[in-house]
Amino acid sequence: MQYTEYGKTGKQVSAVGFGGMRFDMDKSYEENADLLHYARSLGVNYFDTAPGYFNGKSEEIFGVAIKEMTGDYYIATKGSPMVFDTAQKALDGIRISLDRLGMDKIDFYHIWCLRKLEHYEIAMRPGGLYEGVLKAKEEGLVEHIVCSTHMPGHEVRTILSKDEFEGVLLGMNIINFPYRWDGVLAAREKGCGVVAMNPLAGGAIPKYADKLGFLSAEGETPVEAALRFNICCPQINVSLVGFTNKEEIEMACRIAEDAKPMSEEELQGLRAHLSKNMDEICTACGYCLDSCPEGIPIPSLMMVYNHKALFKKNMEEIYDRLRHEYSWGVLVGRDGMAEKCIQCGKCEEACTQHLPIIERLQEMARWEAELKAMAEANKK
Image (tube, rainbow, N blue to C red):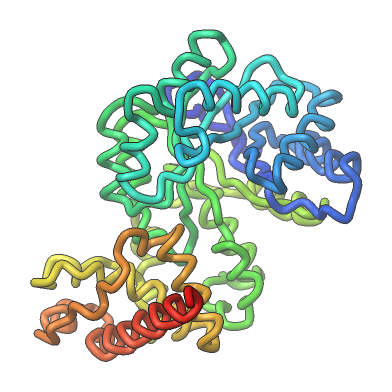
């Protein structure tokens, strides 16, 4: 197992982290807790959960495991500004998490679900979540205050500029890293720890492995390639993986044992590889972003379109994806942007892949209109 220092905390954390949201809940607490023990035996020392995972049951499973956990290890959990909208609620929530975990102190506590800057502002307002977590830190209930976000890289840079957090948890993987990379670099520049979640794109990579063979080097699967990408990345301290069985833990830890740092030249090669092999897929290079006179977030919209171009999803699945992105993902707060396209063509001139962006935006505008019509019909 490889270990690096998490930001400026002095804590040496494992390259592989245990994400606590993939348990098989048909199994007992003890059976699921055994997965944490097995991961610990292979060198994993960073364990991440949240009160919202399985309605608190994930923290309870962690608590069962922690009773017999040995050696040095670190536990991370979270709190959302939408749930803990006052400092007192935050304090109460932290005490509930500690009780479930059976711990006196949380090592890394995340200001959670920062999907857009408005959520960050809610968390930071006087008497809100951050104030409560600061109070918990003063009482010795929390050691390090960090954040968890799904915002694009430049917005991650904005929130980290305030020096309020010691680290950041963000979604980054072999498919979306161009969109997230600026956030990773911003964290490193500030001396913050970096934890990457969703290395398998929320399960999309194993599910569509037959369409993603180009990601792999000879002798490895797309899943192994995706894990290797994150685990090998020197800018990432911990790659969180959700585990359901011991075989998955073994795979991730084996990759960590053999992992070698990925140079900037190799990253550039990966970008070129993605562009070459994903001729229908936007790789979110961002060249079109500044060209649009209407300020349309074209890379974000094209990332959603990727689900049609790459995964060949049907319209019901496309609508589900759009709903998810409007609520949690890259389109939070940007509903209806596709319809603003004036077809000036500047984005297509800037596109290094020569994608039919205007045509795709028109199609997405129709999707958005149909979604709105469905939502209105459901209200009646």
